[in-house]
Image (tube, rainbow, N blue to C red; front, side, top):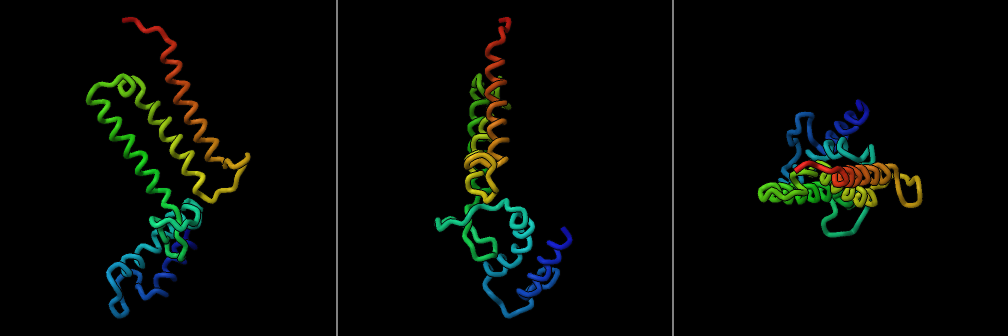
Length: 159
């Protein structure tokens, strides 16, 4: 970890930014300054451990400072879970049975399913066919949620 931080500081110094992230060169644009400030954080947040998306030419690709447009998988995941959250809260407001009795299990299913999809956009090595180890864990999470809902439905509950 120390080596990564040192590399980020060296990179920031090479870009003309001191250790306090104060601009020391002639004034570039505000966006350029923000990008340079975020580069060490972007390096710490995904490049070394490959939690970034695979390269893409889509218009919403993100550049983490290495000049390569990548799928913003963190944004995809955040939007998917935000959609589940809104759906869940609305379902609770009308006291929907699925939300009241199985909300946690549905959250596990939705999280596992959406994460399963996003894993295709990450550069992890595969284990079985096109699937990596995260695919297998996500599939297990979906199975867990579905099994718990099925178990609850089989149990006879007194009225």
